[in-house]
Length: 332
Image 1 (cartoon, rainbow, N blue to C red):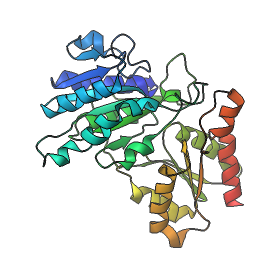
Image 2 (image 1 turned 120 degrees about the vertical axis):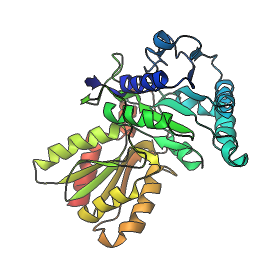
Image 3 (image 1 turned 180 degrees about the horizontal axis):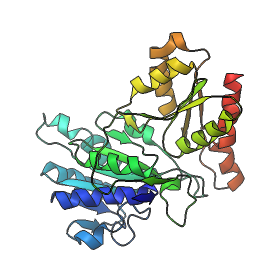
């Protein structure tokens, strides 16, 4: 079936797993009628009722703690963290319990928790509602980190998360949700009706090229692909790699691409310092140093809060124009 946006795909994946298993419980702010605001749980309340789809107060520490307790006694909670920016309110429960209890208990208490959260700017939601921050979760041992760029991947990766015994955090970019009140930067995808899962740690080459590799996740994959299509008409051949997951990271696919093209640009909507781009750059230069024709480059949000002002927001978030300019600079 044709599907526009990742929200419907994620909700469908959760619904199909809930039909198959009775241990999955959905909880968080506005997960019932509102579908977790960004649609990730849309329709689940109508299908499964209040016993399995539970609205909680606006208290992240409480419902993240509930999820830890549920997972400890054999349930698989799906938790909506409405905006990733609010992770600080549930920091202790996520970082010190959800990520570590399996290890600290000597394997006695697995932590099968799936956290779904919305990320990204580009629509004027300002400093406290526009960040990405998946690097904070990728930094802590215990979490798996998933960043789908399209509906097909979103459904398959969500079902994989629900079949994983570890805590998995799925980051859905708001400009890929397909909701009518937000701009949409994705495409309409063909998504199978039946359940399927995609393996974590498997990047995918979205467009093949020979002059330069662009690596990214989420909405930046689409911007890079549009730039690649434009430059191809001018004889500049750009290969775009969608990493899909940051933990685990598919170094093999990316390093193979870089060895072919000799150049790597990493594009990310997170901040520059101590983020995904630095980690990926180090790992790939250590595997493909001899084949590099130019230093690895990064294009990110500079280390400033995301502005509310529309022109200032456009200035700090990587755009197609900035991606194009960076590629031209690297291949000239």
